[in-house]
Length: 130
Ligand code: THU
Image (cartoon, rainbow, N blue to C red; front, top):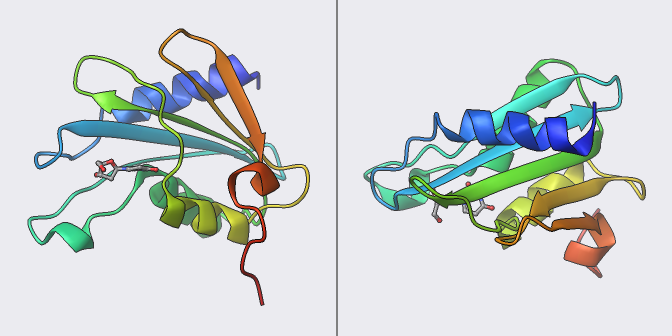
């Protein structure tokens, strides 16, 4: 699957986001080590801290399906009706890190439709791990 197709999967699931409080829709799509694709969207809650991010949803779907490694994760986000550059939040970087290796790529497009492709170390240097 191409980066463009993976981003399309993130954009498609983004439409399913439940975000009545922020009106900021996010979708994430993962290719795992077996080539399987897993998607997730943000799901907010009236008790704000209980909401979950799109990346966390996609990771949960991956793990539930037996995936253990993120090869590539694409993220698409923005207010309803538009897309903006959406780089994973700090907490999501740690979530992604748990299932990453040196080859893992985190990708998204900016407002000018330009690709940004990062390694885990780019986004979370000196990261915590046990
Ligand atoms: N959000 C994500 O889903 N992923 C991120 O990496 C950044 C933030 C969600 C959380 C919340 O529902 C909304 O975007 C606004 O912060």
